[in-house]
Image 1 (tube, rainbow, N blue to C red):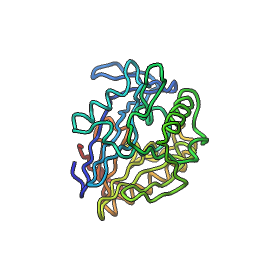
Image 2 (tube, one colour):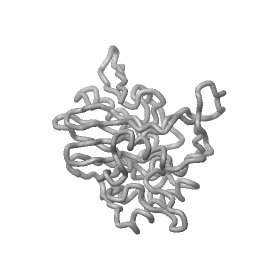
Image 3 (tube, rainbow, N blue to C red):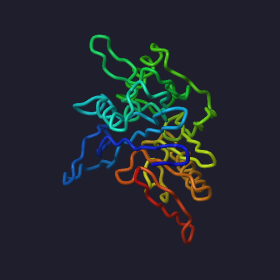
Amino acid sequence: MTYGDLEIDALPEGRFTVGLDKRFVPYAEGDPPRPGTLFVSVTPFLVRAPDETLLVDTGLGSWAEGRGTEVLLDSLVRRGVAPEDVDRVVLSHLHFDHTGGAVTRAGAEGWRPTFPAADYVVQHAEATAEGYAGESARARDLVLDTLDRAGQLVYVEGDADLGRVGIEVTGGHTGAHQLVRLHAGDMQAVFGGDVLGTPGQVGRRFQAKYDVDGAASQAWRDRLAAEAAEAGHLLLFYHSPEAPAAFVSDGPKGQRVVEPVDL
């Protein structure tokens, strides 16, 4: 999708069911429902500006069953982007389903950054934030160590203006979760990460058990929906099994109207 002077592409890795065990089980049309699970997609975003190429979150990578970063890399190749073409990777937080594609297995050498020329932008407080256990804690440590040893880890401290990219710390989902604002002139595309992961969350009020602070996440959902309705921002959704993006407008009786966009 052309959005101002940006070209934004969704890079869906598939649909999954995920439950309290945090396993992302691939879903095929017609599969029986898996009790006690959420139905989600995993969708990094490729953003091409005149002056840089960037990724927002990186998918499951080797944390997907039976595969690695080839799913993400194949999606990029189909769009004419090689791994070395990526200038910057912005990570909303460090759970394995958002950072798995940031690093690639390198045989006996262990791991290496998937994108050899990219700066990886991470909120510094997320390195020790609440909201990590089990496999996500292991993934966080491995990703940070791999990027740091390669000299490609760029920490930001709190909210940050990085030119094309604006960062705001939301907390809520994890202790230092951050959202990403992509500037296209007077327009913005806003990636809410796991604070606002699907279009269906725009009009819902809930506090999720998977958040460290459900009230903070809900407050940010309210804020982002109101901003999008007033200013016309494009919202990007990481976990939407349907449309990966949408515009929002004000409807009758204070309801939000979601207008899906296919990228």
